[in-house]
Image 1 (cartoon, helix red, strand yellow):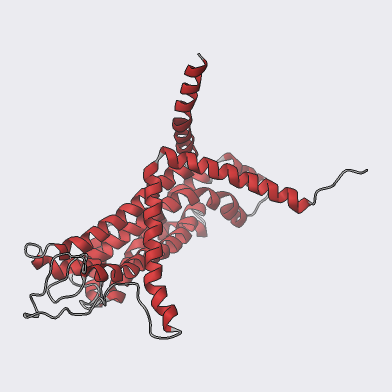
Image 2 (cartoon, rainbow, N blue to C red):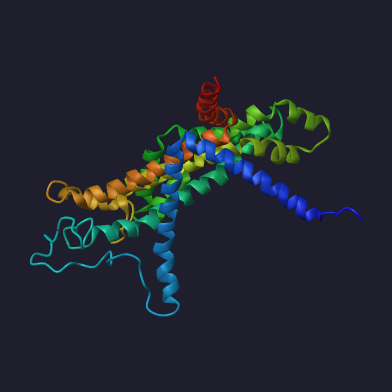
Length: 341
């Protein structure tokens, strides 16, 4: 009888499964060596899923009938009380984070602000990533003096330096104040001031990578500049970009909350963490939960993205990953050697 020939797709599937299993095992070792990374991943996943449900559940249920919200109370519903401006109640079983001075549930307001702040964090950082990466690639790869690319590189970096000469928060506040109060002006102000950081980061990485031997070998083989840029250079600068973007989401949220705290961000009727801190700062002594709740939300969200970004740096960097894996395997090897002795 002849030998059974396995289909090519079956052997390919086994190879992919084996590679995925090895990658998962390596990821598990890294996460075990750095548990804070796993905590950050869980926190970011929980925050993202919660924000999605807050928006998606009312939208989907509204297609078939009255919209249903996962929030325990309407964020703008006023609690009946004798004095309309003195309705603040401390946290209880019914109102977990208490109520503000006009009787609105703080827990519902903090959750209602989550999708807005998270969308602004991802959106502004994503816009800055796209614009800054494109300009940084051009400024770093075609920087030969005396050429059109060199002149373009100089122009890009001079404009970038002009923006970086001012603190980003101060510049964003000035732009937002000139555009007027509102979510849109605050969003535009941060987007205008945020991309230069990515230009500087990407240009530095490109300058370091484009002179490596494998890039020179690609040039000697006749590979075009565009192919070298995207196949050999861009692929090797993705790791710092991913890490920086992850941490930058939290920084954008803090910046937007600061603009709202100054009073030139979102309108008072829109739940937003920085705006709530600004609105309730006078209640810090009499009703501290109204300030602590949105402040804690900002802190935990930024902490989650910082932990995740720091962990991604250890996972994506081969040297850090190798050191982490060695720290997890060394104790096991030592105990095994002691047992054999």
